[in-house]
Length: 115
Image 1: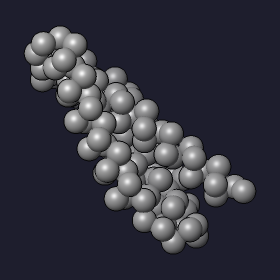
Image 2: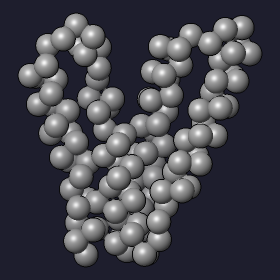
Image 3: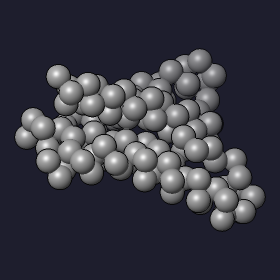
């Protein structure tokens, strides 16, 4: 039960940390970061805690596998489409897609927890 509660609260803690860090840190490079750039680790860890608390199942291996497949396929897609791989753009796109995957995993485990 405690793991599930921490899994539910962790993304909200991540949102709070994202808001605070955007207000406190005024470096030029970090001004480009958006709130969603802070959230993927919190959503991934939250979904892991929910899955371990409810189903006693570790999904960390599946998340890592999905992110690795995403990274390789995105690199191949950008290299074929643009004939080059621009690393800052690649990492920005990869991180934003990681956010989408992490929030989908989190919402799926929240729905599974409720039913």
